[in-house]
Image 1 (cartoon, rainbow, N blue to C red):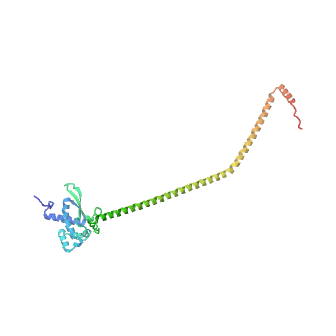
Image 2 (tube, rainbow, N blue to C red; image 1 turned 90 degrees about the vertical axis):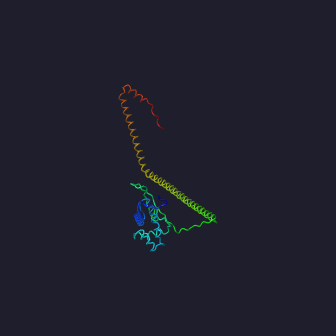
Image 3 (spheres, rainbow, N blue to C red; image 1 turned 135 degrees about the vertical axis):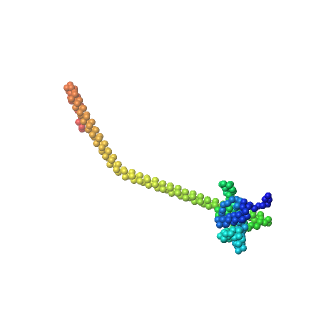
Length: 271
């Protein structure tokens, strides 16, 4: 039975397991991120994090370089670890790696994951701020300081709200003034346009009036000519009718007519 045995042999012999973890560590140092199974990633975390601690700038010496080289057996990986990686993780107190699970692998259904160096993930990682001041908590005077800070924050918020309200009111008043000016300009322009149109209409009527006068005179002359022609035609018609009537009368009628004409009362002479 395996009571108390926490080491995962990964189904390999000691030498095989040692070479596997060394190769995985070299790949992680050079590439900053690799994809493997969850079991191998957990064992790799235990293997590589003590080596990363040795690579910090204040631990950079010949002894630590030789110790790391005894595990990795790769000069390029040692140089990268003590140069780039050591400077990047110098302020991090442990926890240099991150495991992100990906799900089961097609084929043997093994759990896959990504293991990466935390400080080299610019999207997902957050850099530790070493210059952040440490706050000291004490029972004495703690409440008063907190209440004072809270009151200061409330005052600042109130001032910000007041300033924003004043600024918004000023902007609104400016907008109203601009709108009123625009309305006045449009009204004046419409009045000017109306006056211009009236002047143009009056000038047009004045220009048309002298031309209409001769036309009216010509129409009056034509009407008088027509009246004279009508009178002449009526007179000619009456004379023709009288002639026809005289021709149609009998001799007795002609004698009576002559008598009546002779018996007519003579006109009185004028004094």
